[in-house]
Image 1 (cartoon, rainbow, N blue to C red):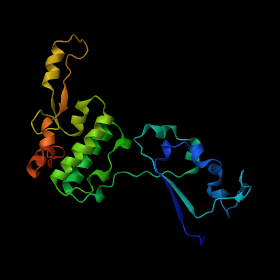
Image 2 (cartoon, rainbow, N blue to C red):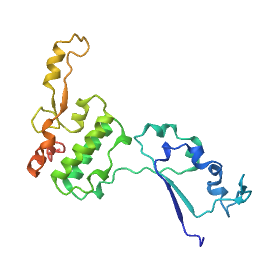
Image 3 (cartoon, rainbow, N blue to C red):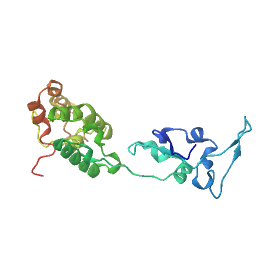
Image 4 (cartoon, helix red, strand yellow):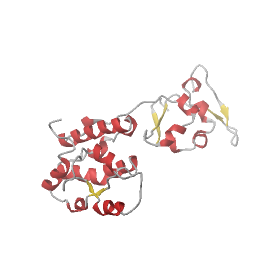
Length: 223
């Protein structure tokens, strides 16, 4: 009514059964077939027998996570009828300079080892006010996501976090027990394999100085 824009937002549309979500609307939502368009299409609903059409002022927005593999299976009919717009991490939304620098470095390394579609969004660091907030965002959100990206490959996660040495202030440290056990197991393929585990000290970090010591190497100012 009154030609005001009406927004219909469908979150994570690539996870949906497109035919069940839209049904016959998959044709009617096309701009050229809406009310008042050159190829206006009006259909009769099967149960009510009422005429039905889609107005021109209805805006439909479907969101997708590009890291989700299900996007590859997105219905071709949906691809043809929607305009696709890429939304990359917006670093200007992050007020804390340290958090911004860390996310930029992490995403640059992700683009190097994976691709641009797996970059980490800015939302994790929007509320970060200090180094402790940044540390908690890394520990509770970013690292679990990286472990999903690089399943069973801690060495690549260490590369993302710029951890080259086995120091006490690293998120990942060598798993000495696993290394000792590997020497007793006959394995012709992993003789040079190094084992890592999350640093047990992470759970005890609750002050600014300790947090700073864990995050300072991720985006060194000298780079």
